[in-house]
Image (cartoon, rainbow, N blue to C red; front, side, top):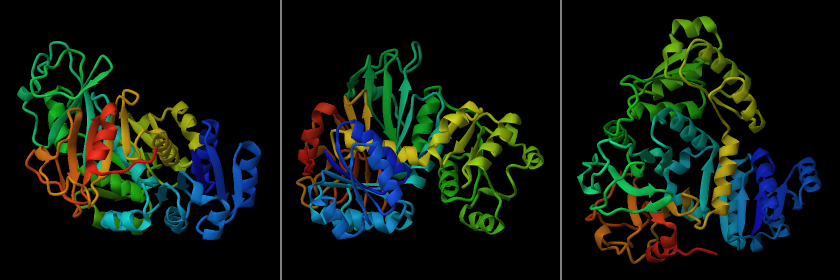
Length: 450
C-alpha cells in the first residue's frame, strides 16, 4: 500500500517503522525538520517537511495517490484538515486520531459525513477501554469493547462437567441483551444454530451489554467476588471515563485527585462516585483509606513517575492488582519489571489499533478471531442500502453472520431481534466468518477497496 503518515510523534514514528518493514511504501510529513531527518536517516521512507493540514504540502506528498492517510499528529485541527483534504484530493482511506472526542461523540454521523474518515481513534478512549477491560477481566477468556464500550465480546471456556456441557444453544436461557455469536472448537469457528450442542473445552464467544454479560458470567461460574472496589488516581479525562464505566458495572469507585478545583469538578460530574482531594503517593493517606483492600488500583495521572510510585505503594499495602498508565511507550516493560501488574500505553494502543486496521481484510474490521477465521465488524448502513427499512429476519444475512448490536443515530443501543427494522446510518456490530465478509459487505451496500 501507499501510506501517507502525517505527524511523527511517538505514534507516527512507530507506525512508520513497522509499516516500512512490512513492505509498504511510506511517505511521512511533519513540520519538525529534526524529526523528518531522523526518520529519513533510519527508515526507507519518503520524507516531506511541512504542515500536513496544508493542501500544497499534501500535494507534494502525493496524497492523491495514497491508499491510506494516517493523520496522527498531536494537533486535532491538523488531523481533521488532513483527513478532509486528503480524501477530497483522492486518498482511498483515512484514519483520524483525535485527543478530544467529546464533540464527535455528540454528533458522530455529522463528523463522519463531513470529515470523511474511515476510522476514528482517541488515545484517551482507547486507554479508558483498556483500563476498564483489565478490571472486568475475570475467568472469561478475553474482553473486547464495541460501540464505545456499550457492547462487549467475551469468551468463556466450557469446562468438562459444567452445566452448559451437552446443552443445546436454544436451552441456555441466555440473559436478555446477550447473544451467542460463535463457538471456537479446536480452533475452528462455528456460528451455531439453536440445535447445536456445547462440548467440553468449547470456547463460547458471546456479545452483549456489559451488565447482561456479567449475569451470564455468573451463571458460568466465572463471577467475581460479590463486592468489588477500585481506586483511581488522577484527574484526567481518562479517570472520568473509567469511573463512569465501572460505576455502570456496580463497582465501588473512589477517585483520588490532587488538584482541588479538578476534584470539585469531578465530584459534580460523577454522581455516586467518591472523589477524594489528596495525594495518592502519600502512604499515610493510602493506609487511612484502606487502599490495600481494593481489588484494583489504577494510576492514570498525567505524570508517569507518580503513576508508578502510587501503584508501587498500593501494591505494598496488598492491593490485588495495580495498573499504571504509561505515556512513554518505552517505559512499559520497565513498569512490569518493577512489579506493576499491567502497564497501559495509550500511544501503543493507538498504533497497534491502526496496524490491525491496515492489516485487516475489511476496512471496518474491529477484531479478528483465530487469525482471521472470523471478524467482528462495525459497519454504518448507507442511506442507499437495500437493507434500509427491512426487518433483520428479512434482510437475507447469510449463515455465518450474526448482527449482534445496533446503535441508532440518537445513540440508542439495542441487541436486535428478528423483527427489528434496519435504519439508514445504523451502526451495526456484526460477527461474521472470514469467508462471508465480502458477501455481508455487498449485501449491506458497502464498497471496499482491495
